[in-house]
Length: 132
Image (cartoon, rainbow, N blue to C red; front, side, top):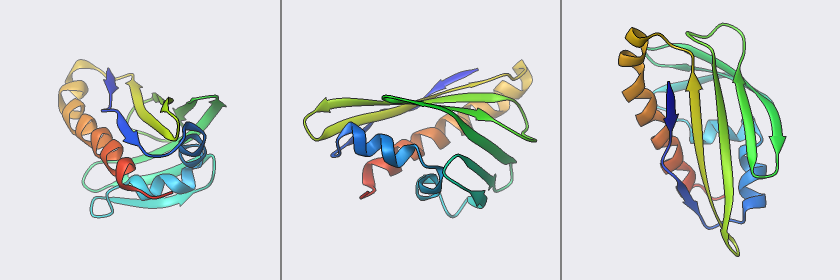
């Protein structure tokens, strides 16, 4: 199952957007506080619990120019990888989006695809409003 988020438009250069998104301690600012509790976070790792769903654990696997590769780790409902892409749009402006790829069976896909799509789009929307 692949999900691509909406593209967040930012009034920040790609280097600032990359630096912010590369640190999972900043990721907590993107999560909806009313539905998500962060259990632990560091620059490379985050564990959070989505209310009524599951605990998610992931880590940064690789940082490249304009891309951050993330993988699941530990006990998760399913294995996944996520790539965050950052693009310089014009001087001082950038965009960012993610592609989430999970190994799920067809039944699980029916249950999680829409909530995950909404969740990732909410992260992109929130990213546009942050001042970092």
